[in-house]
Image (cartoon, rainbow, N blue to C red; front, side, top):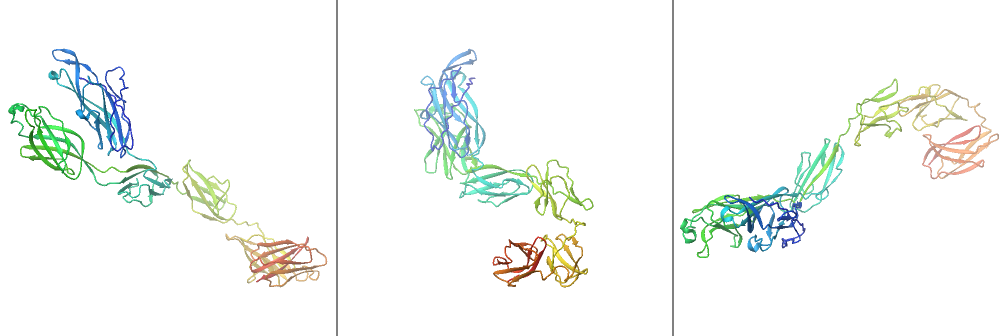
Length: 589
């Protein structure tokens, strides 16, 4: 049998609404053969996109055939007939010699052309099978040559990372919440599969939670039409009668020549099959996926006669285009037809990926209050560590242990190679310095401690708490031993040494005196320093928490200060010389 090696020519033209006229490429010359197709591979197609390509073929004039009784014989081809090309649903074909039902005489021209066109409705890898019947000068003896070959055709889904939807926060640490935005609004229906076990049919789905680490494939389908398509793919006439009553059929001694015509509900002829010459029933036709609609179709079966008599009508059947495959009997006529139902192809069919990374386990931290060491245990080599103190990272504290210096809240943050972090529980660590003793300043009748706003103050006289004496300074009222108890915010307590105060011996009040006018004050104060043996050249104002709110150099023994910008309340004013200071309490209102 003759098996030519056939190579396809493919040209893709997008946005073509109807198939173009196929024009053979007469510049194509097969290499080392007298036949071929050009080009030699099928172009990739995309679902729901126009597919249009031309194939030029070069026909051989002759070939060697092994004929029984004659041996290997050179035969001359008389006719080539492209009988069928199997294509994915939605695609069809035509030839440049459609007037002659795709018959080619190589002695007239060795060039022919086939155009494949349409919109594929299915995606996947298909085998395009081409059937060619070649008639030669010995066909009467050995029969025609039936040539079949197939080429792969890959129809890809029409997808893009940005074509169907957008994802916000598509990559991160478990648990991860991802937001989705539909890029094809207003279509008829949608389908979402998020890979986390959830499905959704809304146009705009809700946010999705991906609780566990992993790679999740998100599948998105958008449909502009929800109705399926129906195609007539094959017809078989199992039995028929009425063809054997004339001389053309030798009154039943000659097999019939059946064919059929297909009409729509308006009586329009939409398809006429080829004639099965001298073929007894049952006879079959594989069709090129004839598109059907929701209407009744009439299929008439005929027997072709020659010019001497009219064709014989063998009967008809009626079926609905949007029905299933079936067998219908009408008298002696029995017809089986096959209808393929194709679900609507999506306007957009998009895949994308959500990446969810593992979050490390929270570190377990312990504190040794004898060694003053915070420590954690970990067997992971893929984690980095950072210690935090009062919500701030401690520079250089990147190991599994840390020796705290100050009282406060500590925790450890562990981070893996994906940037996912987990923290330990926050711990309050109290570090009390037993060797710390506050130093009290004394100026005339004023005792004070100005160092930190983190302390609570309690003044004592002769070891007993002075009711209401909770400021950073104290105006001594009587001679005796005074001390100060400090308590920080973590509960550590520190007590000063006793200071003995004598109202007559601390300073000579007649020689050095600080006067403030007015007191209480509102907009300004006049500071008057009377001294016969010291030069007071600097002034500071502190609030009741010991915070400095004003400072300035003094040039005169009387100085006016604008206090309008200072908040209302009680304050301590101090003036300084090289050897001592004077203090006085004022009220701003």
